[in-house]
Length: 236
Length: 87
Image (cartoon, rainbow over all chains, first blue to last red; front, side):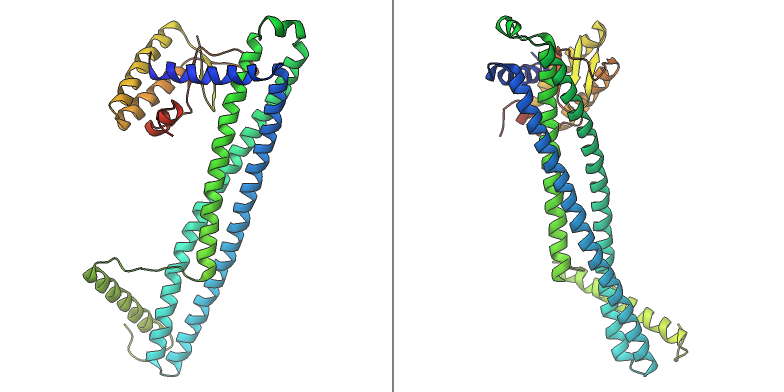
């Protein structure tokens, strides 16, 4: 017996156990449907929370954007006043925040993509649950007490499979939504606390030193460009 | 023969296709026993492809399946869990 055969046996025995649990399989189908509705609601709620977190992160992104503009203006003012030292500091801050901003933008993009995927999945599952509802009604109508004493019909077994399949799909979707929710909340928390890290040390002192040098060069470049624009001294 | 791919649909397979699936089924077990995740992934993908050569059943059909496949993309660790080999 292969792996899929083993899996099938386990799956089918689960279906049978579920159907046999109640005296009347109709009860199992009804209970299962109620559970599906509940799971769908959990998923919907989870996705809604991800959307809320994402909106908060977007607000944080807007704030960073404003800070960048402010530091840029400050740097220009400093250049105009002949204070290159202050301008250098302002540009250095600006570049740090720019790094944070691009990190945050990537996170927002990722979240938006995952959120769209979850919405899509949620719609598909909703359709399946709705189909289960109508099929359950068909089975319930066909089912007679006499039949129950003989055997559970093939159709009931077929629907039992759908039930178990749907249950697993809903569980997986719930898990995924929860994971996404946790991720969105974590990003939101970090962004909100202003502890977005840019270039955290790599642990390699030479690498860190080189990174610092590059950052420094880039600040000097921007300062030179700014001075040229403002007509203040040596063009690059 | 009717085969279900979980989270997807049921398919009606020809005897030839079903025989092919049997061979892959044994290979999957070998991959699991030798803990070969890459081989498992490849063979499972092939198995899903073989099933999809069949005729897709109407979603309203209420027929029991002869064989059930875990969802597409199931990996070795997940398969072990589904078989109750790990938590």
